[in-house]
Image 1 (cartoon, rainbow over the protein chains, first blue to last red):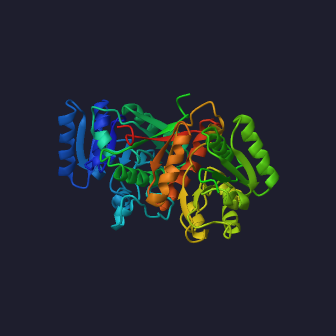
Image 2: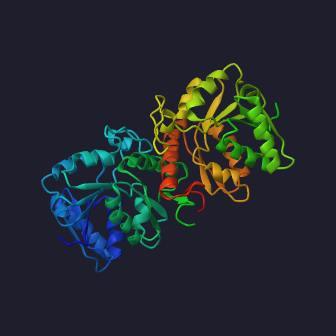
Image 3: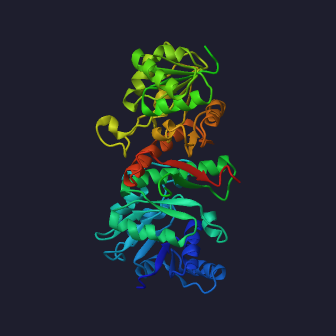
Length: 226
Length: 226
């Protein structure tokens, strides 16, 4: 396992692919995971085309998970639980799993401007309830628009709220240094993910009302700059 | 009733007083409401000291409500329902009631970094369920820090998400023109208040973690500027 590698499960979707592009561009080894190995390989090829020389590979989700200490869960919400359950014999204690999941009501056939309630409080806490002991869960990147990530010629202009245990947050907050325009914000305990996740639904609504298919971002003022 | 007047119930609290100062400074007549008339009068005096020549008066909440077409509810969450219920014979059809309420768990003796669930979905929707027919409810200003409002020498640097029916939102969005540094954002239907209210709890947590007692603000990028 390459200690520098970042695995992205669901790395074939827009947001996961966007993160893969950004991390690859910053020089980090990226392992794209998908349910189907050929889709993962195809996404890796796409990254390589846009970032020549990138260290990027594609594997089925289980194999991708074995190849990185830090794993980002970027599958659609309706596949989050089953994906994590399917990996319970694969995860190693000490691995860090980053939940980007947002319980959009689109998962049940309603709109993406609304959410459904999750029993555990948030998608991130649901994920935490499903991982084996010793696997640490942090939530981050829910509010970062896919199109902004994919557009490598421009900074992302979005703060990233990172929630989880203090020691677990640090390596995830450090990832924001790899993505120009993002700033890591200490989002407190994992339970706060319920607010950060809801913000994504709000922001999708803003994108629709203001006709911004490329997606808006969020910034907190008066926090880091002075 | 002066059609230009803005009534602020709970205008003696930090956030309500901050709005009163800003609106008074912008030249609008301000009516401060409180449960006790002497506290309202005292707050009006404070505004007059900081904004010489301001058109500002103080009354008991019912009398304040009678004096403005636009009424801002700025009482602590635990008094929101009882305040609105107590005014049901006072409200006139066509009046606009702006809910700033946030269901902070502080209301039940827990912290301000968390919220309690509200049966109607949000404090704003609870308020809407309590007003007489014809009174229109909009939510706004939940995320604006009191200290930033009170500090008249500096712009507020915060976006204001305004949620409610389209026609009802417009006059409330226009209020942001009176507060330098704020930008009105179309926050969609009133149900979105549940997210905006939760954001306040998140931002209070950020203020504590980043030691910013003056309070942070929020901005949405890529929405209005390009």
